[in-house]
Length: 317
Image (cartoon, rainbow, N blue to C red; front, side, top):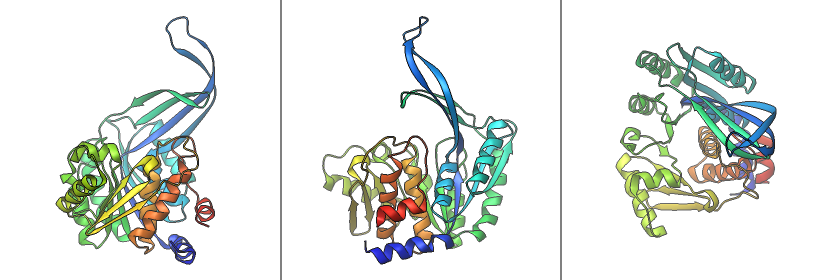
């Protein structure tokens, strides 16, 4: 990628408007020291010294979009509880325009991670599925919010918040909006019509099976892309970088991480950078290169983190 093209693309990010829809959660971190084993069971005792809270799931995608300088609009469902209000406050601090439907029948999804000596020792999840009524209201809001965005990111964490994803893709494409999907599960037919899907290796294997060579991977990935009618499939491959599959074209980006500390949330950063770049008018190859550099930065941080526009500029330079 040429320097001027990259710089121009990043400068244009302030004009990009990205609508993020999907499952949100609150990521809680308890950090502490581990100096002894419990006498009650063979488990470490963590003396908690500090706590942190961060928006997770689709909320982390939106936060990454905003940290890259683009306008981020988030549509999702939370419970009518403390965790839901905390997510809303954190998103406001991050500069995200949030449209959060409250469902009194559910608890906001919370992922609690206990970390001792910079290593995750335990994760506890609290979650319930939102009601159909709330999801129907969200679909109506989706149609309205499409007018204020250039591109849509659908972040599927399998928590039930994207029950109407097929209709969302259809509505967005009717309005001429590109749709990027971070997929989950074995049934990708629900993503038919999306512009691009961004599975990781494990997610793609779950759908197309294992591959023994790059040629076999290309054959299976391209077959899936054509079946879904997608313009592109971007496979994120951890230490192997990422590969962009398009009709008659395969483009590979080697990994850019200097030190891998934590891969959680890296997929959020990748799709956020892709969305912001494409919404700003960049081509797919340029967008993939920038997303790859952003991923290399974020895996050097602990937990669900973001990449700031200045960090990205420095890394590209």
